[in-house]
Every structure is written in C-alpha cells, then in structure tokens.
Length: 135
Image (tube, rainbow, N blue to C red; front, side, top):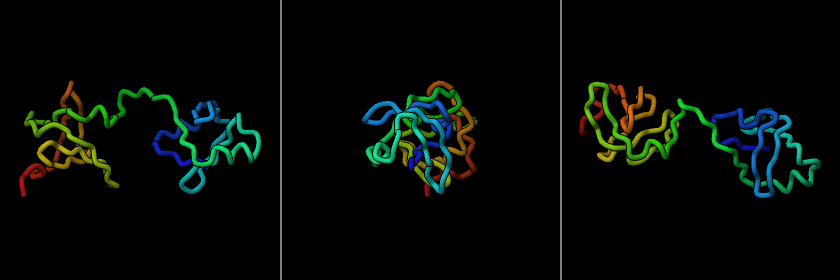
C-alpha cells in the first residue's frame, strides 16, 4: 500500500519511476484503494521484497507545470490586490483543509483560492471586501 502525498496521481501511472532508499522502482500497475494505492512495481517480485519497502519514503523527479504553485516559490513574493494595493510579502504558507493560506508579513491570511495571477514577484489576489481590515 502506498500513501500518495500529492494530488498528482500521474506519479503512479504505468512506467513511472519512483526512488526508494533501495533504488528505483518502476510502476507496472496502480489502483486506488480507500485513501491509499495498491501499486505493483516491476522490481518487487514477491511478498518478502514488498515487506522490505514497508515504511520507506518513495520519491519522484519534479514535474514541470507552469500553472502549478510551489510553496518555496511563493515565500517572499508581494501580495497585491487587483487595484495594485500592496499588502505585504508572503512569510509562510499555512495548510488549511478548505484552501491553503498565504501568511503575510503583517499577519493577514489570504486563501490561495483568491490568487488570480502572478507578475514577477507579485501575487495578484482578488479578495472580498474587508479581508485586510484590522479587527
């Protein structure tokens, strides 16, 4: 059983290669099962070999997607409203079940769902009125 820590299910398509501490693993077949995946790897020929992988972290090469946002690329960018008003730089990205949040240097929390564009080191957000008002 494999727990996938990404929304990129193509990581488990036939022919994909993941890397374990013991070396590369080529996906033969994968299917979702509850919240995990049952994966058959070409290099894992029996149950004993599969047991040796228990608890290991599998890694994959980065996927280039120009539309994808990466946390390390958001840190330090300026949050700007659509009218050009600057609201501070991103200090962190906080996980949240509904939508991850941009945490500004001033403490404002901006759901990523309000991010409408990027321009250089600026993140353009279209937020509801009052989001940046102090309480």
